[in-house]
Length: 145
Image (tube, rainbow, N blue to C red; front, side):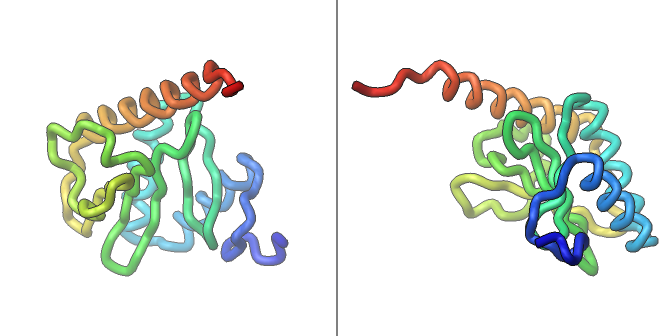
């Protein structure tokens, strides 16, 4: 199933995923790669136990007790999609895309946009806290019966 690692739909192991993310950054070779490095660094600093994954035909994914966010790159935008973004407080109004759904929220970053690193770090912390709380609830749920 992993015949084409960059385009594969298979989830690859973390070390391999990190290498594939590195390769994507090199492949981009422009502001999008630089932005992906910036957000990746912030994610790793905010959530030191983060797991890097490579899913859905080549999308970097950062997880901690569940998906925190994805880092998709398009021709004119780097899109950070928070899996449970609709449940996160966003006092700095970073979310500017995918606002109509009940679950996800995204931040579209265009060339030349400034990045509020403090606000993004707060969102990452909130996403990790939400995932961890959800994970703990599942562990402590008792089977019906």
